[in-house]
Amino acid sequence: MTKKNKKIILITSMITILPILAGLILWNKLPEQVATHFDANGIPNGYSSRAFAVFGPYLICLFAHLFCAFGTLADPKKQAIGQKMYALILWICPAVSLFCAAAIYGNTFGVKFMKSSRFVIILLGLLFLLVGNYLPKCRQNYTVGIKVPWTLASEANWDATHRMAGKLWVAGGVLILLLAIQPWIPAFPISMVLILAVTFIPMIYSFVYYLRNEK
Image (cartoon, rainbow, N blue to C red; front, side):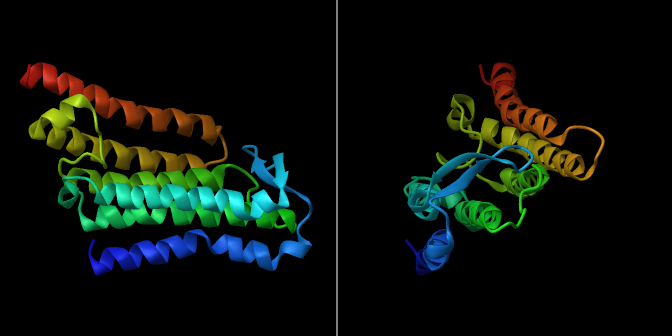
């Protein structure tokens, strides 16, 4: 592991658990039962103990973060992933952790951070844009990308699938962002359909590529 990777893992890990420090500072002002789950309109529909609200979501994010960080470094083909993609991976869980903190603590103190699902949809759209931009640059590996038997067995299949997937994910990200800012049609269910589409279409494409070019 390089010094640069150690530094970014340390920084992102500290940011991931930063909401715990905020929760400890606010401990005496938090109720015994804290809203930790919200519906698509930002209305609380699930409650947890104060201790879980302060520690639970962020420790889960930290575990997921460290698993992704060290799991990616353990990939025999980690050099193919690229430093920018690895950095993007390392910032996902900290962003989720801070978002959870803003929603949970904000709701507790009357700040309606999650009035609707649109903010979540905007984040998803941006994520798909970022990942879609890097997918074509991601070389064959076992951790990041469209990992199905046909892409892992053939570098040509991998490259073709990821070129197509990159364009598809960028287009999907743009559509998701457009859905988030328009007021006329329900954004959340259509966004979920788009997410499923851009997830599974590259897998189907990889299989078709295998049938046409490699079988």
